[in-house]
Amino acid sequence: MSKKKILFITTGGTIASVRTDQGLRPVLTSEELLAHLPGLASLCQPETLALCSIDSTDMSPAHWLDMARAIEDNYDRYDGFILCHGTDTLAYSAAALSYLVQNADKPIILTGSQQPISGQITDAKKNLRDSVLCALDPGSRGVMVVFGGLVIAGTRAKKNKTISYDAFASVNFPHLAQVQGDRLVRYIETPRPTGPVLFSHKLDQKVFLLKLTPGMAPDLLPAIFRLYDCVIVESFGAGGIPQALMDGFAQGLGRYEETRKVLILTTQVTYEGSDVGIYEVGRRVRDRFAFLEAHDMTIEAAVTKSMWLLAQNCPTFESLQRQFYWQINFDTFYH
Image (cartoon, rainbow, N blue to C red; front, side, top):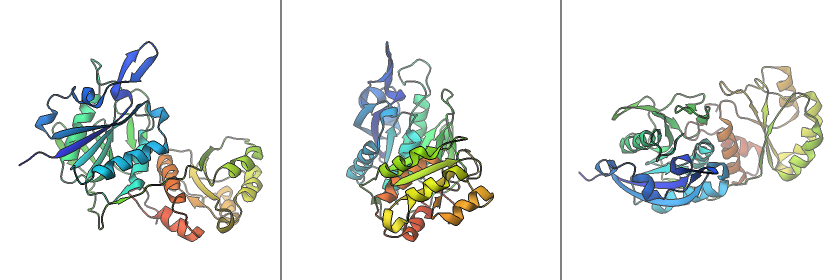
């Protein structure tokens, strides 16, 4: 039986970095990176594609589109894809790819490391090998994050530690599987797609994430709504907007069919999601504005899904609402 063909797409990040006088810098080529896994050829047929070599702090929606295009261009030639990525924005890239590449019947895995693969002590080799084991499993499909032994749905990953090797958690949803030695233990089955793989080629970057702080003044709201078409509000607790900001949001939003402005409410609390209907501060928003609520979605998923949705040019608020709440890669269980 021939080994599966896996395409390793490299983008830089800590995993491909070396130490310099100015700090860690991603300089390893794709071939140099994989050379640190000498047993790789016994598991699969590896090939490489260098997409870029940057710190993931510099990652942008244009890079997400490049990643999706690279997968589309090579989709029929490979059995799986592993993207080597810096950890700081890895969760954003995984969520974005979940919307840009839908109905994939092949594994699309993002991984990275907290320490360079060239270091004497590193988590990079394990994360890469775990990614290969996951890619070879017949039940693996769609966009996933493999890190610290966990397999996480692409829309549910969040980096919650800056140094530790178990840096990523699955938020408001169980992790899909776990790598134990040479074995993948699967907990959640990813259903086979009912249609062909779908690739999107546009993202609208006019999405602003506003984190509320106590006493925030409304002065910036007119400028925000002038420059952005979607404002995601990270509110307190279960969700709501302070009374002092209500008029500013009303003026900025207007009617969606006329302004194409969108408000999405979410929470600053990592786990358990938002529920705007619990408190009066949330209900007064519901009574005054047409808005969307992220509920159990991660911030990363809400931001990237909004960019994807704005590019769809939904004609009515109801059509926008339907698509926002439509579940993609386990991103929400609010229907």
